[in-house]
Length: 468
Ligand SMILES: [Zn+2]
Image (cartoon, rainbow, N blue to C red; front, side):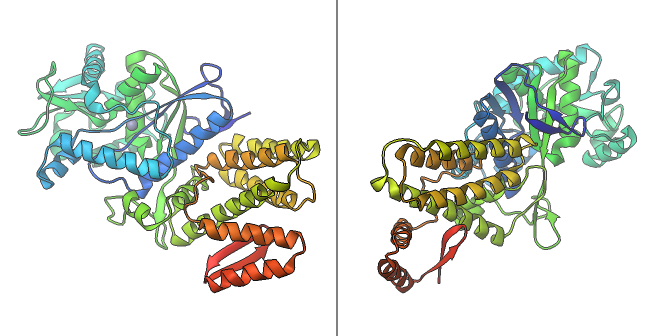
């Protein structure tokens, strides 16, 4: 049974979806004013990995992730790039899509944009004003946070501390307008030259928090199963989403709140963010390293833990993918002499690996323990590849099983990126020669590879190779 750590209760809880066999999941997407940084990519990879495991477990997943395509940040980029807000949004949405494809992140069921949902946003804000939970001041509309009895339930902090945090986030002009510093904006009056929509409170545009409430409710329903995002979104963003949504619908907004950890860089594990100026964009990273290695590196760290972004980590991830590919290739090489049929004992052992893998992932998506199972499984495959007699159905089932395990980490082993196909082919031939005790051939192949600058290392986990 799957258990997930719920930020709302700070406990691991059994996961039970609202509708059997179906998961409704919302993950906060990026504000599209620049290339996404590694931290955004990590969040997208973490929740894509979770989604893939839910699908592996038999759930149909409705996955919604938004694009924030309006706001001050886009306006600033538009001025800097001498273009329009719409052009900025189009450019960076295309870039996010390109980076996501390179990282093998499955497209969401739908990627709604804030600008497509203005009518629904105005309807929600109108309702909150009518309920007396929100008020208009000089064309802005604010939510009366303290009137929502459970305000702070997600962040687990006393109101006094949240007040300090909230006042640090807004400018003094806005604070002066609000009844209470902790109130947050649902609608902002348009400043001269800004993109705006007509509303009951005059020309303006939505606050950031309200768009996620509207899109989650519109595309997934009043109560959703999982709401995800980076841990820095817990307060105020997610706290405010809960207050608005639950006031609007009168129902619980999300049953499980999942938050991914930060990405750290450098020796002091400083949080990576654009404001610190130490960020690496996903675009830069993808042009410098094997995209599959970046994906695997990110997916193989538990989502709640900080991810230490280092080149050594990426190199290790690449070497690991190569070990999987070689194990796969070694076994597929035996297809030519495999006999028809199925080896029941081997198949039974394969199922035990699947059970162990599920046990690992059912514990709040424990990717590290899942990986330990895959390592054992690869040793098992390598051993079977040396069997004098190979059964074809078993061979194919073993290969497909490996593919399925690593697909949850977003790795596609049929791709040859990062492994020179010719080198892999020669390693497979050499291993086959060694298995047949044809040491003359195996030595010849090693010499051939050495001459080509490829160093081979035979380990218990199979043959590794690196460039000299
Ligand atoms: Zn959001």
